[in-house]
Amino acid sequence: MAFPHKERIADIVWGRDEHLGHLFDYVMIVLIVMVISLMAVQTLPDFPVPWMQRLAFFDWVVILVFTAEYVLRLWTSSRKLGYVVSFWGLVDFLAIAPFWIGLILGLPGAEVLWTLRALRIAKLLRFVANMGMLQRAFDLVWRELLVVLLLAVLMMFCTAVGIYFFEHDTQPQAFPSIPHSFWFAVTTLTTVGYGDAYPITTGGKVFTFVILMIGLGIVALPAGLISSAFTQAREEANARKRQQKDRTRLNEEAQAIADDIDG
Picture 1 (cartoon, rainbow, N blue to C red):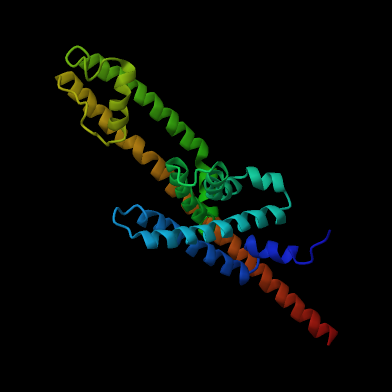
Picture 2: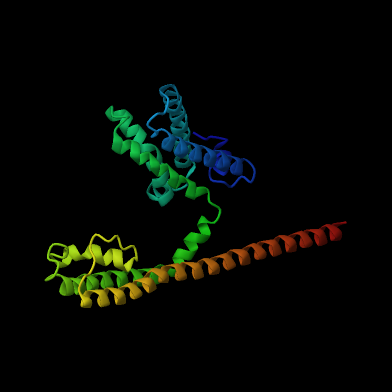
């Protein structure tokens, strides 16, 4: 059965329509921000019960809108399975799944399912204009980021082994084993330093200082890589925009010349 308005709906929900598509995006952004904000407000201990009921009704409305959006995207997608298993498809599904699962199982107020509603904030990422640019940036440097991650894991292991060697005899309760020392390694390399475990021997302090300096470098590496890649992605996007403008201008000039010849 053919649906004459299917293409029109697809242009709107997928943002291809310059006017209604953007309006649809803005409405979704407002709904997402509102429902996330109201979710936080509902946790206030003295929140009035009548308002709680009104917010519950509003949540119903938003869920129906999100569900309709998911159904429409699935219906208008040329690759339905591809959409379902895609990142954005999973985000759209997880934004509504906790509510419907709780309703079907008779557990609409289950704490775990209620908490999962916070996943709706991920839907905002779909409507961020520069997300495609950020994705391109990660595509450019994911191999380098993987190397940094492996380096960080290696350094964590070396830190855990080193601090265990220096501090175990003096602090057997704080550093009872190498696996237990991993928490110290994580907090030191990430420069967090919670302070629940710390060196007291001279060797341990010197070792920790060296590791802390290395940790500063490891933490800074991903930021530098992503910043550089984002700059490159932005330059590529600007180049594509200039090319598109040039093509449009050339097409207009060619059309004008053709009209003059015909005239």
